[in-house]
Image (tube, rainbow, N blue to C red; front, top):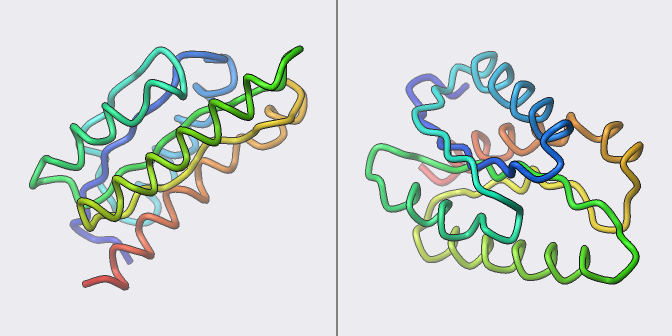
Length: 137
């Protein structure tokens, strides 16, 4: 399905106990689909992702990027702000660079337990990038 496709991954270090599991699932699924992960960038948090995603999208050897993170609910609406701003910018970058960006970020409004239950969202993001890339060729 994705033979020869090159993917970049941007992963959040925040909530790393969860995002490391997501990252491992993304790597395994990319391999299963025949895509190669050629570059990975770890960023402090989900809000920091757009700059790293943009860097990968400017690379002519990257066909698409997967963003991996977990935005867990806190005592304020901070999780909603982080997720809303980040997802909007990632969409803008995909359109700007004509390359798919997979939203493998769970949240907002979820507990740590719910985040752990959603680690497979990273696989879905890889699959979305692979499908979009093949359909746009």
